[in-house]
View 1 (tube, helix red, strand yellow):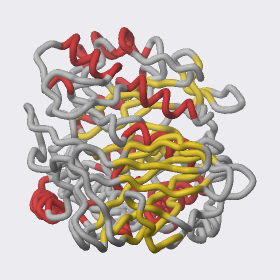
View 2 (cartoon, helix red, strand yellow):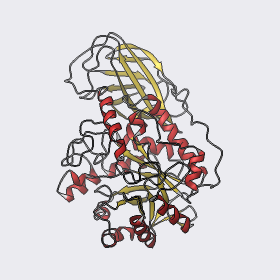
View 3 (cartoon, rainbow, N blue to C red):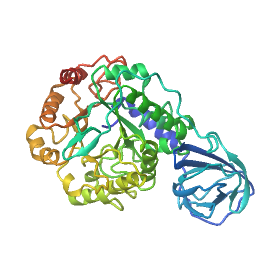
View 4 (cartoon, rainbow, N blue to C red):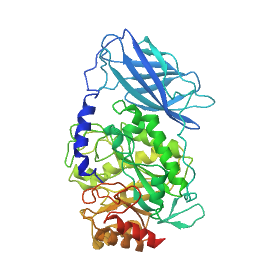
Length: 497
């Protein structure tokens, strides 16, 4: 679902604000530095790897082309990175500028990040060189010698442990082989509050608010995220980025699980300037709106990091991308589906795309075997060629994700029978978003009845206190008081229990 209209002004203001800190593409040229400082930090760490970041400040003459080097004290090994071309020889790590961020003015700064493996210990490097000149600086807050920890969690909730879901034929089953369905809500906010600079979530995500969700007999909550906030890119306020953002998401996941609720972590807003048909923020490349597809620059790194964070918790479900719409960028529907699966240079899309196959590969390369949801095209409403183009998964643990609103093209039982039933007959089928902009529930009543009859899962959009006619929103307060739209979902879920 797109951001509600009430956020339009905030989005515009955010786009203007981040534009002032953009790393503008410049012609590359040789340059040297008379002085520099580097802040090094870890934004996440797990049993065999970590996510690191460096912020480089040029204190000397302007630099037109930069190379940053440092030596790891231990056995760390960089596996991928962003905002630079990363390589490693022995213990020496080298990051070279991209074509678009080579220039650093006097007093200017830039940030770059990476994912690396480690074993034994993970001490921070202490010596950095910019174009061969030694820099001042060293570990920043949360460096690998003092890795960040999750904030204290609330006392366990009453719901017990959520199931470890996996695909079995066209059903979801738990660790005991019992058939399950994901029935619940979306909790929007993690995709936009951080990039707009006023928080991490929109409204409370404390234990009381989770209890209110659980009172609706919800067993699943989908959590939309922002890749730039998770990766800690420089234009995001640091208090809402990197380690702070990751810790907040992990804490929310822990709270949901304490109530027996399945968390679905989902990538909603992503990087990449898109100026084609149906664009939503054509004036910026930043993750301030929905884009037609994931990007190759940051999205594989995002999913590598997320998968590393949750791979030891098979109760967490991964939803790879909110609502692809490569079909809006081209009239060739087969080209759109090919772009969806394979990525690369796609017709009508301005940036290099990361296809669904590459994202599945990124998740599985970490060893994570969590259930993965993969949406269709046309804002996840068109599933007609999902089976033909679905990615290969060595773990065999994929489900199809569909979104439906009363204003979508496929919004009738005849369409569902024709287009969705064949998919639901072969793989687990999850309606990741259901809703309507009528402040009523007549449409989702029909949707839920159809999905119930096919043993499918569904999640209402959204557990936020917005105007139900423009959001749509399920609640009028975070105690769980339903709107005239939300009462339909609440009563239906309680009736199923």
